[in-house]
Image (tube, helix red, strand yellow):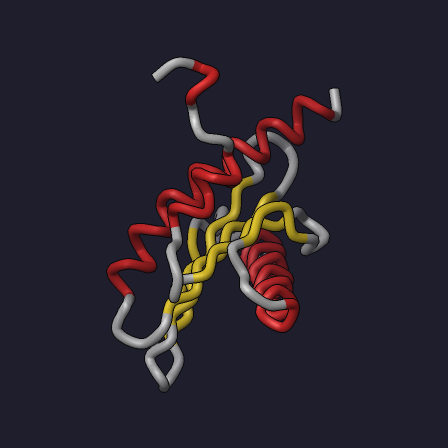
Length: 130
């Protein structure tokens, strides 16, 4: 595939978590960079999950537990949220995938793609700050 016919990162990101899954990438302040959310309410909820991941990451690091790789939340209803964070490039970027009941496998697969996109975003952000 030539450079000009390659899909944009936004198009690629949207394809990673088709509805009813939701995917979200945010920066270290919780602001959305890429999101497949379908409503402002869902976006706000995904931002709150991003803040929760950042807090868990900070706490685990301060406790000397090592660098967190992934946080998985499964509710009593069966809803799943999988979060990853990447700070290798110097800027923390959080990727979140939320899936309804019975879609844990799909959420895991989507989270791998979202994690790769988050790494690319973090790299671009770090390069932009140089």
